[in-house]
Amino acid sequence: METEDNLIFIQVKGQSMWPFLLDGDKLIIKKAVASELRVGDVILYASNNDLICHRLVRIMGKNGKYLLYARGDNSTSASEQISETKILGKAIGIINGDRMVFMKSWYYAVLNKLIVFIYPIVSKIIKSIEPYLSQSIKILLKRILCKLR
Image: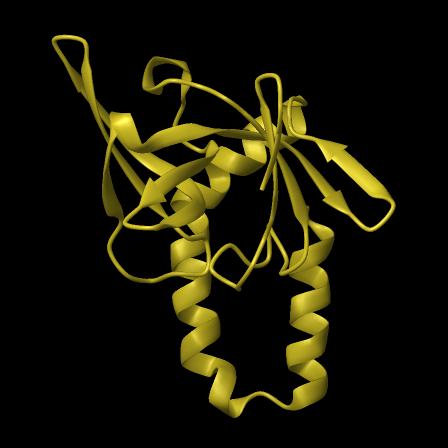
């Protein structure tokens, strides 16, 4: 993890955010507090001794205090509850090789909201039919889903 002013640069490890984020992608994280976050944002937070980057799926606020819930896009399990004090920031850009994408456009605003509601269903369907798919169909599905980002 590298830091510069109010930005954090971190490399993605794992598949929990696939296909939106790929293992090895680099994220540009802008430091943020809970009141600046919206459902659909990809957030960075501390959990035990790890840094986790997942999608914000629910925000509950009361009397100026926030309770947040996040989940990996590739997860069919329940979301994780996060205290606002654990939030480090939200992703504003993705670097994949020589390609850099900033997530401030209307396209990413809409895509992030859709992923919150639709991708858990799609993920369950893919995981249930995956044993029956040929390797070439699996590769094709992965390519199609990765093109959406």
